[in-house]
Length: 125
Image (cartoon, rainbow, N blue to C red; front, side):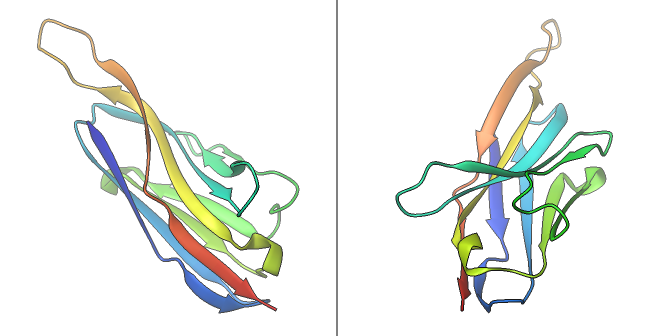
């Protein structure tokens, strides 16, 4: 099993900044794409940012230029720097990771996909 634990959420005024962190732990052979998603009340979960193991990033237009995703492969950690926050950024932010877990010496690694428990980000106007 692979566990993801997010931290760094909180309450901030519009125009402010927050930095989220997500630590992956457990049975990890390889971490591939890691990402952040968010879900506001009454809305579907949506993509915020993804980053591959090689550092390629992807953002929707709604956060492009304001949010920056990064990762520290040595620490199995992904970050989300959020600047110029808006009230519409208010949501629960979830970390996601995909990769492979080790199995037995005679068997190939097994793919996994995991979600964190979420961290609340609230932006006041």
